[in-house]
Image (cartoon, rainbow, N blue to C red; front, side, top):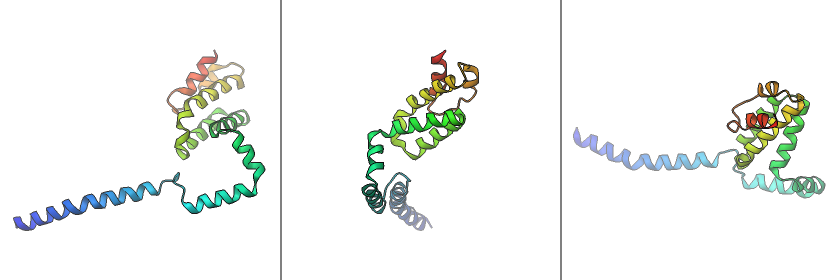
Length: 142
């Protein structure tokens, strides 16, 4: 009985790390920001056919395009929608995370401006996006 248990233990000790490494490797290759080669080719082909759109997009850095879109959305709707979209954008494009704080502060200042300096009303939209950057932006105006 002891020999069977030892043999089973040794088998698991050899097989389990291999299974874990393979499953971890497969999990990393399935993340949404990992672009497959066919996706890259489609993007390249579409960019070549739409040179004007590519020139406009290339002129703005991705974080500035996101900031502009969110500020416009804040003016059209409310700060809550813009903060939710900021959170979604950070989840979809982790490379933009280093700009999250500055974008959230900009949204906070814009929220105060939208509500004519009413920091209490702007502060009511505060969310835990990028720590407390939105709240910092709101309080920095007053």
